[in-house]
Image 1 (cartoon, rainbow, N blue to C red):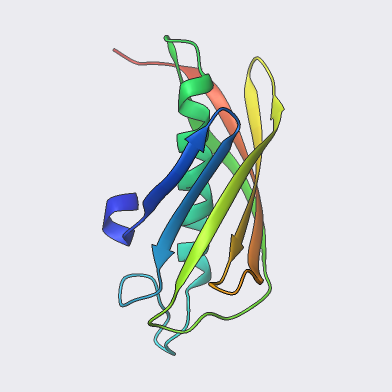
Image 2: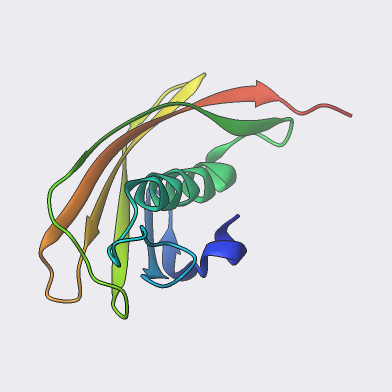
Amino acid sequence: MGENLGVEFLEMKEGFVKATMPVDHRTCQPFGILNGGASLALAEIVAGHGSVPLCPPEQIPCGIQVSANHLRMVPVGSYVTATGTLIHRGRTTHIWNVDITDPNGRLVSTARIVNQLVKKRS
């Protein structure tokens, strides 16, 4: 999905992920502004990618809960940056905070994502 939305990763290290996404025909509402669902997808993609290297080899992360607030509109032709920070690393869950900002650094959306660690299926 990230590829379909134009998500590009800028930085990844343990407990931290930064990525951008364009506001274009793939991610906007009919009114020419960023779709809240695209913001949620970006947040979950960032949190999921952040959890992958933290999982034991036999496990994968699966998003089980997303909660977000959308605070600002972003017009088509712009982009947003998502910064994900791990706030809890448990044996069975990871909790991430993802802040999405506009090119001026203003907060657009903030999301909390819970990833459950599950056994890989063969």
